Image (tube, rainbow, N blue to C red; front, top):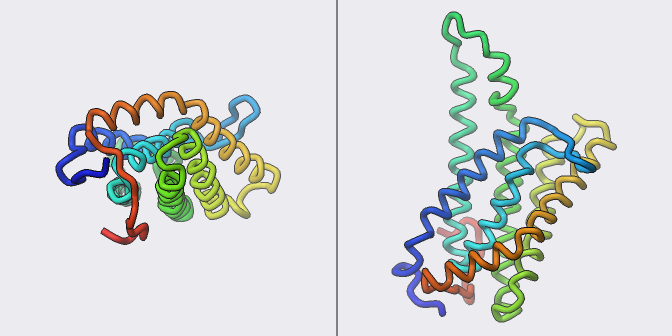
Length: 227
């Protein structure tokens, strides 16, 4: 059912957008720490960031690429504003007696290279994920949701992980740590998507029934810059 997208899908679209943006911003802040979890070496944001791709899958599957595009841009704008605010706060002189400037700079201080890497990787990865899922939905005629969610994540996370790691850390980390970071991030993120597949099924089925929407992106302009 394609229906009228402007009159349907209003009940849960807003909250999902809010959760999507929240996951994105929290992940960006948590990414300031490189950690080890079992065999994996990755930035802290990786623990939560894969959920943004799950939200992206759900948005595209239920509401279509055009609405998902609006959410992706909302997340991009929010991350940009967050970075600007952190930079301004870090630049302004600290009040007398406040001695935590070094700690602030270490955690929330804006490093242009990291910010650029995060924004470019997010933008390219999310749109690659959404585009792949939308196209696969048409190809599979709406069947095999698991193939679409996992397949789109395989593509989107590859774009995201490679771009972010290359822009942020290439030349800054020993090559063995860099490779471990890329591989660990990618395997962990795709693994989370696979693990959450039953939940993705349940949420998309619920939303399609409640919202009365199941959009197929026939004749959709897939340009990220088409508003």
